[in-house]
Length: 187
Length: 187
Image 1: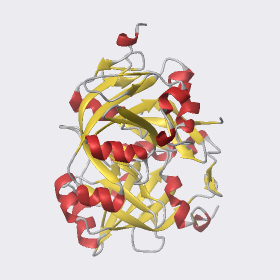
Image 2: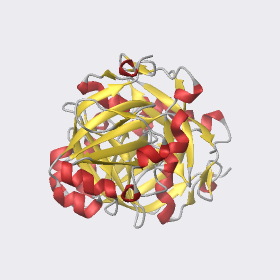
Image 3: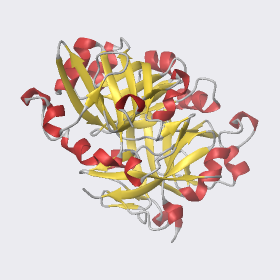
């Protein structure tokens, strides 16, 4: 499938559904021609419409500097296919060189200059809300979702599909281990 | 197994691991002899040590009133065995009568008077942090974890076990559907 068919826009008011089941995320950021990538398990929806998210970004990271400078970040929702890269992005600092290239991660852009990671299931482009006090005290960023995308083979019409084992999303445990998103429970 | 052996204390600095993989939670609260229960998918760890959590609690709920009055809540992490009750707690208001009894949910207490729901995998007792501004603007509560418990058959020594299909935790999708926590991915 051509790359531009691997990400289709998602209705903003339903974009929380990409994050609702608690998957691990990759945070991407860029500013003045520099960019970085980190993993974040502590991300969740905060509101439906307009959609908002909350994410914890440690103050000692290069990503944090880029986000505070640009006011923007993207949440990428990785699949099992790139699980080893999700772990690897936490093992080095972007200050030491471009981690995308080092990890062989390709990117594309959506509605801004934020790098979106190919091979993910969904993507949320976000603009941070001016809540300096909780940013400083808790490393907690609140942001509005300004654009959302999903791979239509994995998510469409508001529903996840996961057609192959490698297409499932991930949930971070600790110590380099994930759970794979399991089966849907029909009640 | 006697009921008092179904919840063992968890080291506070590792209590984030109960919530790290993004499971759906049940929020319980109590104040002046009244108590309530609601489901919350939007909950996540906020810090390791002292452990903190963030959770979204809608302003129109009875639970919200009890939490604001008492300054406390518990996050219960349900298993597949009680998935239908997790859905049902969202279908009525505690103002109309005790939902625990109506749903046949048994409770016990840990280190406070907060009701903890039997049949869950883990429990976090929390005291809210005084962040009135974001509570009012975003319905977002930040809280410190004051005690943590887990069912040792499901979680021990910092690791999840899930010995049976019914013992797995849940991830809320939307529209009454869950994903079950899947297999661990060894990398």
